[in-house]
Image (cartoon, rainbow, N blue to C red; front, side):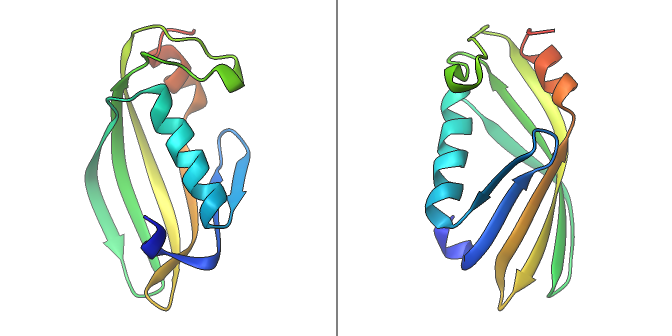
Length: 114
């Protein structure tokens, strides 16, 4: 993952308002997200791209077996499937900015919180 991003990159999770900047912060955020659902898998549905931008449609599936205590989200052992898109800005063949769009309520319902 770190080879894909420039030094001044940013990652925004639009639905939650979370923003990470810099390789270490982005890596830590992604690791913490996956730790909540260790069996996470992402399926790429479609990609539209040119040398400056890419849009990736994806489906995230996994079981909320650990949860995210730092966000007061408990483990529920519910398996979920969540659709989303990532919009990426590309500079010098590397991702300079990534914005993920997905529905927070669908995630909460999918993991059994709502």
